[in-house]
Length: 320
Ligand code: ADP
Image (cartoon, rainbow, N blue to C red; front, side):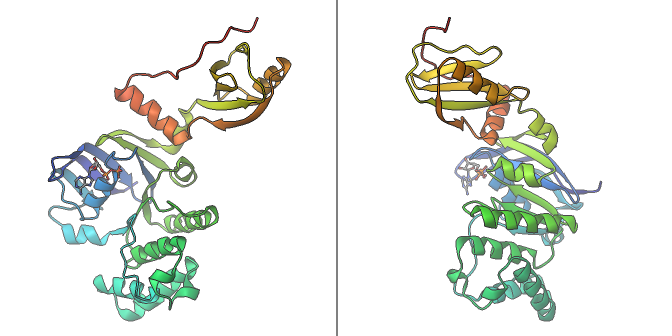
């Protein structure tokens, strides 16, 4: 598959001395749906800023469809459509005008711009609002407006920085459907997200960066296969006197009415419930200890440079 974006040994030290990127390497294939994940402060926005020519790099090489951003900046920039996290349009301008003016910056004819604006506003369910000022839109609508604007010059690569942050579930799903459609029509998509479900649902490839370096780049399927275990917290109806034993399962007691249980892929939570019931223990409610994305980060970051910290458990006599 041809390559849309290559990043080699990308480094960035901000003027205040912060060494945000220490050596990021990424390769995004043309047509891919690519997730850039990493904890807060990992350097994702800095990478995106450099690709979109908003931030100057300190060292390294970035090529966009073969065009080096150092020597061929104008061409490289034309290939990128960016949807940043923060709304940065004129809130007093009618939204159709925002789109048409954006196309103007890229030298697109007004008649073509009008047609495209109509197409994207319709697809993103904003057509009814075309004469409204941007400030009159809801948060979800503003986010969709940002996507429409980034598409006006029909970029080869669409970059979305946390596209569905703060967007309700229904809108999130319709945005996913739209972005998927854009991808199926050939646009390469790169997104950052805090929701693993989002990466899981949409992306074919996932890269993880942490502390300014790439720690992984692989297919979504391969990465998710590594999440072999989930940890659940069970809140009990009554206080425990002994720590229940359940063959093959690791159970920890956090306090007298709270248990923590590790459940592997090939194990069933229902078996634990049956066993606890046999021991006279009733479960009031339960939750996942961490979301899967956090688990993934923790497991990857731990193996790279952190000690394996076990949760603190209180001591109770073991069930006989
Ligand atoms: P992420 O998007 O993964 O949360 P960022 O790229 O925003 O990470 O930040 C990486 C590091 O660079 C952080 O330590 C952040 O404080 C710092 N940083 C980001 N932008 C700037 C800036 N404009 N000036 C100085 N430091 C910055």
